[in-house]
Image (cartoon, rainbow, N blue to C red; front, top):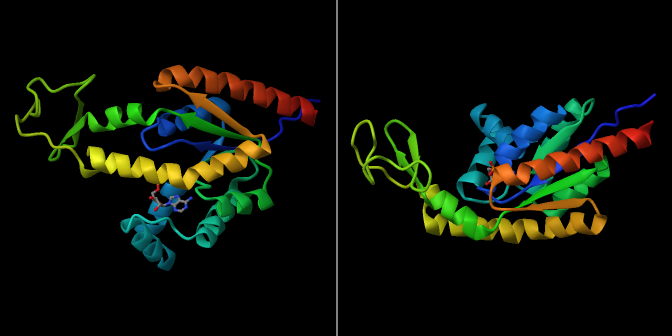
Amino acid sequence: MVVQRLIRAVIMGPPGSGKGTVSGRIIKTFGLQHISSGDILRANIEEKTELGLLMKSCIDQGQLVPDAIMSRIILSNLRRIDHSGWLLDGFPRTVPQAEALDQAYVIDTVINLDVPFQTIKERLTSRWTHIASGRVYNTDFNPPKVPGLDNITGEPLVQRDDDKPETVTRRLKSYETQTEPVLEYYRSKGVLESFSGTETNKIWPHVEAFLHRKFSSLSQRAA
Ligand code: AMP
């Protein structure tokens, strides 16, 4: 009898690397549960729990939530869903978090989206928004009819703070400093799988093929 062994995976990649899109496709294709640390934090903040308030102050100040709190929240969420396979997104962000995760579970694979920072900068900084409606344009592949103006109202478009070149550079820099040691940690354990490219649609088939191979080798070993 072939027993489908549960897969426990982590996805990593800088902001703007297409991690959201790739996660969505992995979950749909392989039937994994998705656990996103950012989503869990935002839900706690919305519920205005005591923990939520503490987290909000960290996030508002652009800081990471302390490792002990973060690890506790994620591990308790994982325990609830561990009857099926899962994909962790946004956690671990530090080596102590990776160690806490390791003490509870064996991680089968860590998928790393390796998209050049220059590509991400171009992608994010070409995004312009019409604030009142939320309509988003991209100067490369979805430009407004008149440069700088909304197609419907003719009002001026603005660049959100998050999409301004200096903010994008700062976010990428802090991702690099925080997560490079985590990538190294998983590389030394032999579970890191990096996928390089500049377009999500070209990276995805490689991720998909790799996971198909991974699933079938885990199933065979469990049989
Ligand atoms: P995200 O949506 O993943 O960018 O997360 C939003 C914010 O939540 C981050 O900027 C951090 O302040 C916090 N956060 C998310 N995941 C973690 C984590 N694993 N460790 C610490 N802080 C986190």
